Image 1 (spheres, rainbow, N blue to C red):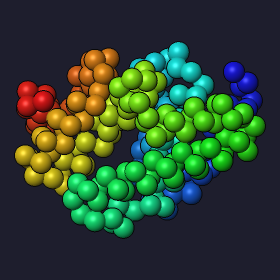
Image 2: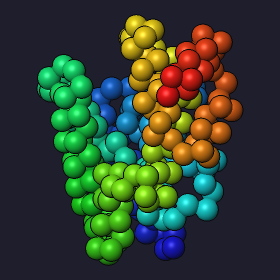
Image 3: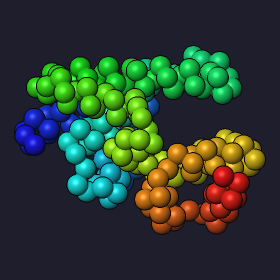
Length: 196
């Protein structure tokens, strides 16, 4: 790995995410939300798979690059609208990541690999795509589940948690079980696992 090129790419990704107009308080400072998410994704990958490839490290950092530019509210309510939104986002994230990585000097092979990972192609068949999915689920459980849970009725939340759990690998599930959830959230996750 060319460390200078990798660092340059991470700086470019972080600069793109640093333009997020929404902010969040964490670790004693105010962060642009998208930047904080990318940093959390990278830290979680380091814990889960410290030997991850360069392509996976880059894909994890830019998985939700500039997500705020395609708001969920622009799509219909319900599962179909949600899927349309996620499909549009995946394409946008992949294209944006590809442009940044080309500007940082990466060749087409690595750029295409990162784009494939960001789109989560061959999720269950590609171990790196599965690791990216595990990392996204772990970051959700660790940092975003408490606020997310407040927005949903209990049965709906259990259903969402069951679908999330099904997407995870055994290694991802083991890491998720180690996350310190509140007793209420742990109980809901346990219900979701039993239903799955």
